[in-house]
Image (tube, rainbow, N blue to C red; front, side):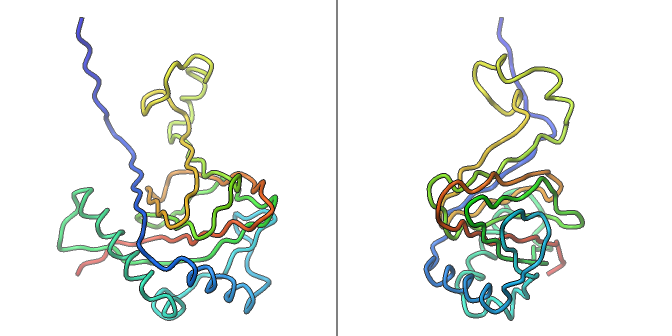
Length: 199
């Protein structure tokens, strides 16, 4: 008997490795932390998070990064089939620096269109990003020890290993968290949200 599987009501995750000067971005992140060492407390545990940065002003020192990020964001916009009469803008952006033991509790990004993260510094064992299936009841239907091969139909979560210069984007309403950094070095990322605007 032939069985056809169809993916319905799917989520997405877009990934891209950005061709940018990662060292200058890393230096910029530490400079921001030096200027505002208190940071803010949001989803971060034992880590530092910057205040929301003005994309056009604060990131002018790493302009190539911002331009490349915009190209990637609007590439995702087009790939998902949204109209050319609209485009994505970065509505807010911030820096995360997680020292050893630092993590981020489960959260989502309400009132945004896309959310994403760019990995600046990722030593081994610095903590994966874990994305939770929006149908929470799926974990009560079957357990991991019943699954032979994980796929989009039988997984209650999706883990992403961080990679330097890699950007990931996902729907802003998807709950996610970051595992504790088990390395002795900082884990640095730049997170962002977008809004859809008319051109």
